[in-house]
Length: 516
Image (cartoon, rainbow, N blue to C red):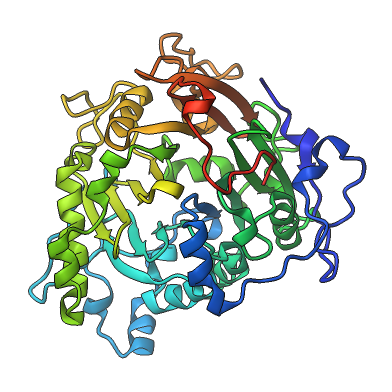
């Protein structure tokens, strides 16, 4: 199924405090996704009781933003002399000698004599941890730890993860976090600290919530979230679109996209308008889209969103008696969380997914698990809620298939297809049902496939994303396979279940047969 992005764009209409959803016209078929009343926020003292009685909201909200490089080019190193003077630090403490990276030097994490990592930092990566922590306070989550390599900083959070690249930020939070409240602050930080004033793309997505009524506004109702983002990204400057993909009376996935009008695209991802327009850089004439490709070649993201997990498989994601006892000592709490995380990492087979990755994981008290991993310029992340009545696990990766991230050639540790990745992941978590999303930039794909208006031939043996996930996953039936062409991006959504009768697979308490 091919859907025209421009045909369903949402307008940027101002929100009214007493009527947070703008006038939406004749939308009878989809009116159930919009709330008509302003929800009452949860009282702080009631959060613990509600989550204990109703379960934890595992499905995450995911926000991703791409900024245009300064002057349309890779950002130079910051003025380290001025940064050092402001922070009362030496230049050597800010950044070591910098050599531009033509080919990524993967996973270099050799510390200096003081045990600190000295890695080149530009763009968003120059923002200090305390600034990000202030922003995350708005979201209502905290930083547990940070790992890094030459390409990215990976923040492990009390509620999921954040990944910071030179011109790109991905923030993923679960529970009743208020992620969208922090979007204006993220944009402000990029402008104030990095000189990044222009946005190239914004994405916001989430699976259908298990307990939508527990979310704080604007979360909980998809229409409210779309209207809230349209307020921040008005239609005078951005083309915005909100989608619901999958069954409105079953499992589905929601996606919001925004691109600046200067990057108007047709369905094939080709820029519209005069080539001399503002989408071209004044000092070089190169397209903004081409500039973005230089930073994110082969940008493909796979998500596996799993529910109704096998209780036997989930036992490992609880602290054992020894860990619970050791954690009673406050001085050992962090140590127990780290050691427990490593136990889970090895015992479950998660360590075999990407054996060469830098990983950072954490086992929560009394249960729950989070992991961030870096593989060169790519990341992957795992989050697990193991309680029976609200069990959920998510796996997200940007590591490509069909080639080695390290050498560019096939090895025994590689995955030939994304189905190979999915099979390995579902063997670990053993869900009764799961959905996948595969999201790719067309421009990165067309670099390898060619296009109709170039002399480069299309390799017929190299399938596009919309021809992916056509294989089977053992023991599962694929119920949905929905493809979308979204301007510069392709999206493929699939839903699977184990094929047992409905009476043998009860729905989770709190699941809703409406779009949330």
